[in-house]
Image (tube, rainbow, N blue to C red; front, side, top):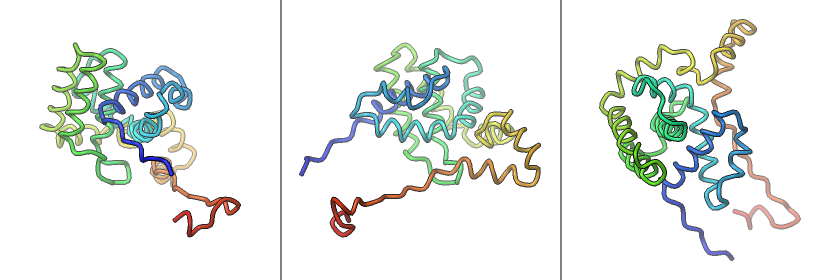
Length: 193
């Protein structure tokens, strides 16, 4: 039996997730970006990156409202990650972390990797907490923010599937179901459970 592994601090995972988000925004695949993540951080980074990228359109609209001029790429990716993780998922589920925890850990990540921009990260995320209702209402009027898909894809679905385009976009934003399969040659279901 192996000893349980300790989880990494959220600030560390946010920094790695910002690396992955920045890489994807620069045109690389998420798979390729995650290969550069240290092995102990990869599962947590992947989970956060999936959620951040699933809410990227929403996060971009919030960031543009909060900081019209984009900061340097990695700082922007960190902000987008934190903004995406601060919002409920597209299915209406709660945000994965309490807001003040996310602010604190995002600022800590910025202090470690981009110290001159830690104040900006702190100010932007605290402003989000103060003005969330107005910012969310404004983001809801932006199709990309609402549907978390590129405008060209929204328009294509709207044209090709005029009666079903909204259902298709909602379905595309759902998390894939998780299925566990037990290899009966190695263990039984009862042993696995």
